Amino acid sequence: MKVNFGNDDGVLPVIVQDVDTYDVLMFAHMNEEAYDITLETKKVTFYSPLKQKLWTKGREENILRLHTIELDCKGAVLLVKAEPLSEICEKGTMTCWGDTFSHQFGVIEQLEKKINDRKINPKEHSYVSSLFARGTNHIAEKTGKEAVELIVKSIQSDSEEFLKGSADLLLHYLVLLKSKGFTLDDVLLKLKEKR
Image (cartoon, rainbow, N blue to C red; front, side, top):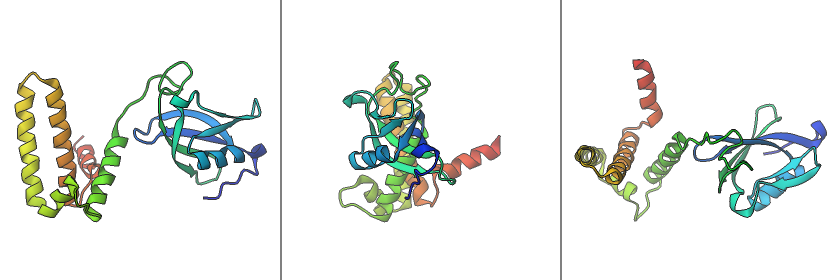
């Protein structure tokens, strides 16, 4: 990706997004030097036009670990997807807008990508690959068993076991969807149709 820092005094605005949750974490700026350092070190580095100096987020334990940098269609704004290692705001919150950290659908999308990879590129000791190898009928049966186990766990008082069972069911459901050629987005579209 070729980024042109030749306009606006060699500085571009940067939106930083959590790579897993897609939460917007902060807004800052980069110049070409900050961009190059970010790519080289994988620690997101910024440039302050006001102070005219480079800076990174906080202390070593709450840096932003780079995953990707994307440029918008006009070549005017950078989108940095990063993994925050701790709080982002100097006030101790997870974003510069407070604790709006969601931990939502980005994690599911990452899981769906991994499931898809295991289907296309089977791994010898991968549980998900072994499910695909046994076929859709087996996956459906396993998903049904996980659903029944979750129903039993929901009646019991162990919250931790209920949550583990919920995660197991979700994993098997996503594998079942993929085995049928669908994703969770397809299901969500059907839900929107019902509204």
